[in-house]
Image 1: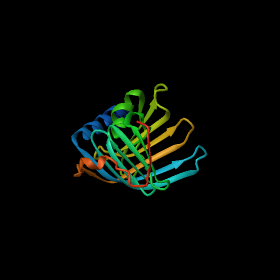
Image 2: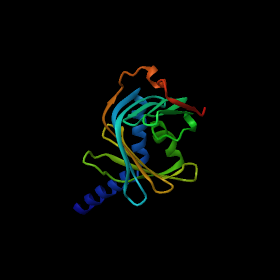
Image 3: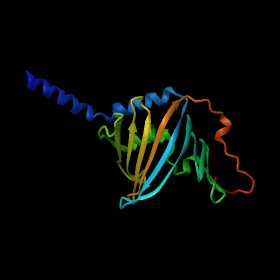
Length: 204
């Protein structure tokens, strides 16, 4: 009897480990239940040799659908779901592009609604002390210019970390902490108005 119970427990764990779609569905449902979120934001870049290639942090505001602000020391990225403003504070210039032509990785909708349909999904394991669940996305074909994507989902079914490995093995990690749901965010904040003296490059 004891051996049978152990077998059942192991089997149930195996079934759970093979169910990334269920984890993803909970994250999608959670995201559909909120209007937006705010968080502290960190970014790290690691080169193909495994050496650090960049690090930054700042704040992140998000509002459905595809409206976001990523504010860091050297740059600010703003999207109103139609246009994306990428403001380089150091070189005093802003590049404006249409949302769907912009390669930015900050659209949560893309990661939990669009990309999974183009990928094979795999439950990896719990890789943190907070028991976050990790889903790995491997592109089925060449529609996505990445080798893999990993999504960390916390106990509240919100994304707490994203990791992207591109075609030349550069690894980009984006972490979110102090996540707050449904903050009051004015719609006007999702349109960027360049300061005077800033070079504007409009690609729309």
